[in-house]
Every structure is written in structure tokens, then in C-alpha cells.
Length: 264
Image (tube, rainbow, N blue to C red; front, side, top):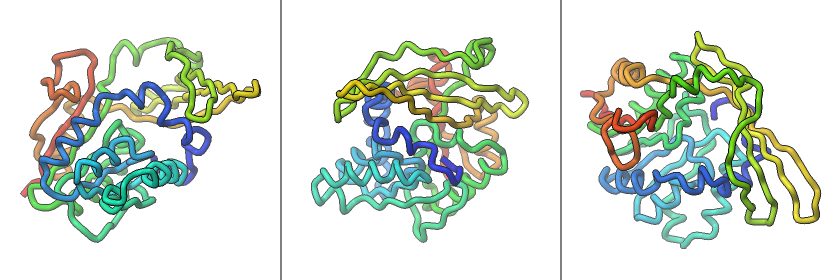
């Protein structure tokens, strides 16, 4: 998240219960990459600590940066339930991924689950990558985790209509939640979709509420992302279609996961 307003305020305490997030099969990938880096890790867009806390449990020193105070508050709540050894490995920072100065270097910088796509202009993307460059050890690496655009989805005419067949889930405090999705508008020239995730919430006492997580999202294609990294001084080492490290293109649309090394 890069805007000043906290887009997650209405749903931060539900985030960890959403099935798509809770069951996302990327945690083992990031923990393995963090262990292989043999040095401190910086996670941009760390949110509630879904990836960050397992990384710290594995013995890795990790800094998490996020712009959302409410998501960081949830992360701190989760950390409070961890052993002291885990808590001491974690440093949390509220900040903007386009401009940050943490005063130290990292062996690996990760951006799990697409926070980079909240950067809507090339200028913002390059600013973020420049900040990453300045925080990496020589030969340090960055991992960009993007969604691979589905051409069918990009041409779907159902703009403005709520869709989605996610199963109902129950939050830790007993609320029943059904989540829907809608594209509010598309700007094809800018490659930006204005999106809403709509949460229909039923409390244990029967009271109902509708909460909306609204955001703009820029999609990138594979070679666009590679060229952007090259322009920022990185050398792309691998492009995967999933978190099992399958070669890009082995599934469609799959994910778009790029691993790049800091240039000389």
C-alpha cells in the first residue's frame, strides 16, 4: 500500500481468515529463499506477518515494512503470541515502499503477494526498485511476486458487477463472512484496474455489516517486468509460474515470480 489513507482499516482484522490468503502456498517458498540468503531479509508489504512470522520462526532476522497502520497492528498482535526468540528477530516499520531509508543492508528483499502492483506509475516502480537497490548487499537479490495477467480476465465485460464464488468463512471471533469481488473500472492505457473486495459480515448476534476494501492495481506482463528490473540495474535470474519454481509458462495464467540479483 502506498497511499496515505489506510485502505485496509475496515478489513485488517479479517485478513488472516480469508481462505485465499490463509491457504496461499507461498510461505515455504519464501522461508526457503530467506534461509538460502544467509543474511537479514527485508519484506516490503509485510501486512499481518503471514510470511514474515514463519520466516522469523525459521531463525531469520527480518524487517517488515508496510504503509498500513492497521495491518501492522495485526502483525504486532500475532507477534505477541510468539516466543521471545521469534519476536527479537523481527523489526517492523511503517513506511512507503517508494521511499524508505532503514540505514542497513539486506541479503534479500521480498515483495510477497503482489504489493508492487499498488505502484501505479513507472516512476513509482523505479523509485521502489532504487530504494531496494540501495538496501541490498552486493549480489543481494529481490523477489517480485506478481499475478500473471489473464487476457480472458482483462477482456471480461462484467465491469461493475460483483462476482466470486469464495466459500463463506468464519473469523476467529465468530463472524461469518462472504466475500465478493468487482472491477469498478478499467484504464487499459495505464494498465490499472480499480477494484473492490466486498465483505458481507454477519455477527454472532445476527447484526450485518458490509465492509469494502477498495484499491487500484496495476498489472505487468512478463517482459515488461523483466525490462523494468533491468532498467533499475538488476539481473533477472529466474522467472517462475508458481511457488514450486515451475518454469514460467508451464501453467496459464499462473503466477509471475521474478528473482533478480543486484547488478555490479
